[in-house]
Image 1: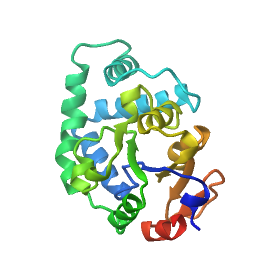
Image 2 (image 1 turned 30 degrees about the vertical axis):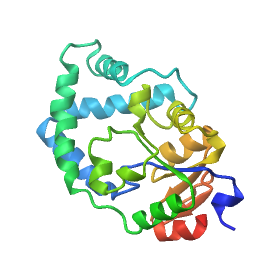
Image 3 (image 1 turned 90 degrees about the vertical axis):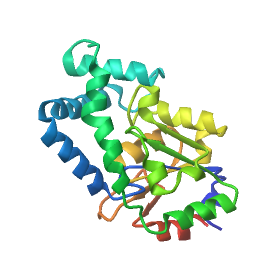
Image 4 (image 1 turned 45 degrees about the vertical axis):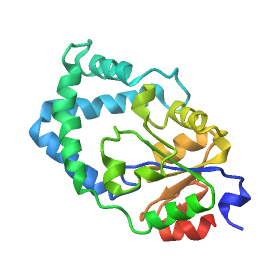
Length: 226
């Protein structure tokens, strides 16, 4: 028997950036954003770190994407400014939507999704960044029973709120979800503290004590799950 049946899993959910495609492709985009708009990019990245430090892992009240943008503005500029969303869209979101047409899907991902779907498992996607066109570009949009950004709930991983909201939206208990991600501190720590099972996908040697499964690629994951 495999991990899914042994642990009564009903849904397998995935991080996106660095999990469905190589992390360096995200880094290239962020570097381009930093070169084009260095001051905003610096403040934006610093702000996201501050949100993680403030919210940590314990669930916070869920808000909305609009409220999250206001929160970003307060942390970056010390106040809510009227054109913050316009700046964010111009400097970060719109360039990303143009860049994400170049994403390279990891090998054997589609084979895994096909097998999950054929065996009756729900599939979800939860990212710290806006989804944009990523799922469509990667060819996985049609598999999604759920797809969202943590920003839609007013916080970032590893906070537990987005994981609980994902479980609620999919109609399952957190313990019935297996979450796959490439970041130990965000994906594994966040999902495990919310009561999910977790997979760490990485080529790096290290200690990942909270991860239920540690794998290098999706072929290896298929062998462990079924």
